[in-house]
Amino acid sequence: MARTPVRDPGKLLPLSPLHFHILVALTEGERHGYAIKKSIFDSSAGTLNPGAGSLYNAIKGLLAESVIEEAGERPDPHLDDERRRYYRITPYGQEVARAEVDRLGAFLKRTRKLPGFASE
Image (cartoon, rainbow, N blue to C red):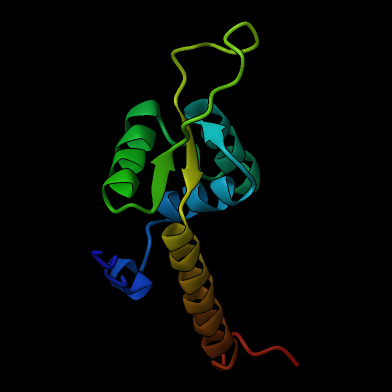
């Protein structure tokens, strides 16, 4: 029986803002492309609004790294557009997202100690 190699989530860091926001959107549940785009726009207060090409190129890259995967189950075709593809975060993707949160947290902690950023 072949063992799945252990992958280091740190190898994918730092994530681009778009990749990170996609992972955050998918931690909330399976979504199709437009729902991911809307989640990114909302969670970034409108500062990140990827076009379709950028979004799907990022999704393609995350699929290739096995950070996300296409969801197998689909909603009832009468309730949804059958052309939509749904995505979900993989367990490895969750590790990558956590590693990025830890990396960003450590960066913010160091930055807050700098003279221009220190708060009393």
